[in-house]
Every structure is written in structure tokens, then in C-alpha cells.
Image (cartoon, rainbow, N blue to C red; front, side, top):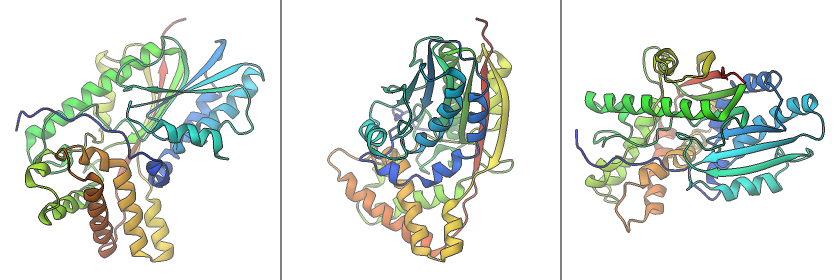
Length: 354
């Protein structure tokens, strides 16, 4: 295993591209939404200002409905005059402009028809503390926590270390997942008020396989095709790796068992088969070309920036991504399949005393 410097996580593709191509992520969060609504009806509301934190907000499209649902449960409980602060947290490179444009202009904005709501953005990694201690009443994180803070090592044989044939690479990925998860929980323990709740949904691992192998392999093969066509070098290809992987139930529970999540309790945890809205649409339409295009656009939106970050300075990253997107769309259209991946849904409660 090479000792080259690890790569950091990258934000989703900007310019509103992720907002336009994240229907899969919108479908994923649906399984956790009832847990958020229930938590909004149960958390203590003693603070002068109610704090909602959205960890891993990206460009905001998939935050609108969950935050609106939480506000609509909280408002009757706290009365018309109490302020609700909503903090959207993501990497400094995130496209916050699209988020605030959506809040200001889109009919789906949680500000529409609601008073006393004060949104803010924080451009920092949620693997550290990003909000004042004891300021969060209700937390939400969707489609974010399978992203690691960095790639711990190069992955020369795949775009994702979790699918590497090298056991040392896979062990390094698991160690990074564990460290990031413990850091995330410690930071949330400080931020959450006593009795606060945090609802999380992110990619997990299946009972027999990781899940997502079909699409991960197709995306990686498309990058290799582009290298074969001379649009990037083999050396660049060896530097590419997306810092993401699903966690198993045992990996999720570990910090709660060994004391690293002090002040927090794991109230509910489930791993469920993730929906595939693209396949459902294909079953109705039979349009394989459309199936290929929506998958290719989503993969570019979510994973393209992390892959392209490894390319040589001066390389036309847009041209490379265009070529990869085209090849992936054609590959899926030629062999349509239903995706098999897994969602973690969980509820965490602050057990601190007032």
C-alpha cells in the first residue's frame, strides 16, 4: 500500500447541479423522515431560541421538506413568537449560493408561509464542533455520513477503497470510518442540549455484501475507459478514490459501547434496503437511455468532484467528466439493472443532565 498523501473529501458538484440530480438521495431520506417528525414532537423546547442543525446540507434541495416538516410540528408546541434557527452545515467549498437561492425563491422553501425562521450556513466539516455547546434541539443528517473526512490511503485498483482487492486498503478505510464516526458523535454531544435528538440516514452495509457494487464498478470502469481513450493518464487513475463507504451495524454501535459517544444514547437503529427510484421509473417507461442518463448525472453530481480532484493541474476536468458521464450512461443503458444498496436510519438522544 502506497504512503502517498491522503485526499480530502470534496463537495458535491456546484452550480445547482447536485440539486437537479439528487432524486436518489431524496428517495433515500424518506425512510428517516417519520423519525424526524416524531422527534420534533418530543424534544424539550425550553430554550429561548429553538436550534435545528442540518449536517451535510449540500445545496439544500433535500433539506427543504425535512426542515419544513420539523418546523410544522415544533411551531404549535412553542407558539408563534419563538424564533427557530436553522443551521446548514457543509464543507467550505459547498455551493451555498444555490442553497440560499432556493430558500429565497423556490416554492418548496421551508421559509414559504412560515414566520420566525432564521437560516444560516456554516462552511466547516461536521467531523468537528461547528455550533455552540448546548445550542441544538433537533439535528438532521441525510445522505452525508458515509462520506469520510479524507481518504486514508491511495486506492490503485478501484475508485472506492472499500471495494479494493487489497486487505490493507480495506482495513485503512474501516479505521477512517471509525475515527470519523467517533469524532462526529463527540462533536454532537457537545452541541446538543439535554434531551435533544439527532436523526441520521446514510449508506450502510448489507448482511452479505457492502451494496452499491454494481454502480461503483460501472462508474470506475467508465473512468478506466476514458483513460484507455487517452483523456487522462494511468498515473492519474491510480490517484482517484472517493472517500466514502457504508458502515456496518457493529461499526455504528462501537462508539456507544466503548464510551467514545459519552453523553449520547442510540435510541433506534435499522438498516433497510435503499429505494431505487430510477429503476421504478424505468419499469414504467422502458426507456433504457433515460435510465442510463439519470444514473450518470447523479454519479457525476455526487462523486465527480472527488474523482476529478485527483487529475493533473491544467487538465480539463469538465471534458473528462463529460466523457465519463457519457460512457457511464451508455454502459447502464446497454445493461439495465436495479441497484442494491442499504440505508442506515437512526435516532440519537442527548443524555446529558441540565
